[in-house]
Structures are given as structure tokens and as C-alpha cells.
Length: 83
Image (cartoon, rainbow, N blue to C red; front, side):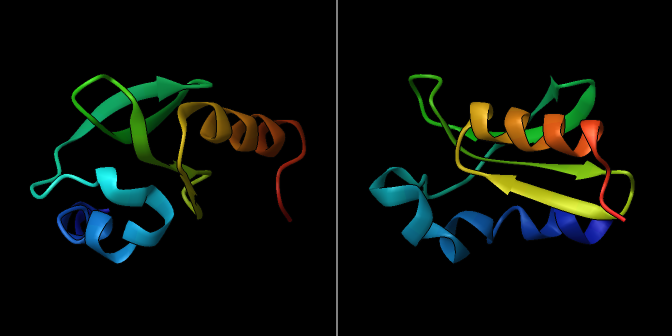
């Protein structure tokens, strides 16, 4: 988990092709609760989510480019956990 927080600084640069040109120069992730899971999201100034991630079941990292996509994937993992 600590290394993931360290990766947050480079994450927007590494995944810029998926986020478009809105990637901020100095990323600031914020904590949110999505589907009763702790998630970290990177927002633009107008509260639009560029990138978000959550750790599911202490095993899987779920990355998504919107809050809705992250909620959908987490909901599916909750309904039918990966084996």
C-alpha cells in the first residue's frame, strides 16, 4: 500500500494516454468511499474524475477513468468475487 501511494506521483504521467490532456502536472488524489470500499481519485478543477483506484479484497487493484466505472467494477467484484 505504501508503494502504491508513492506511485500516485507518477501515475498520471504513466497513464496519460488513457486520461487525455487534462492530466495535472502535480497530481493530488483524494479519498472517497465507493460501494463501501476506500478509493483514491484524481479530479480536475471542475470535480471531474480523471482516474481512480481501489484495492479489492486486499488482492486486486482496480483502476478506472471515471467514478461510475470504478463503482461498476467494484459492484461486480462484490457480487461475484474473483477466484
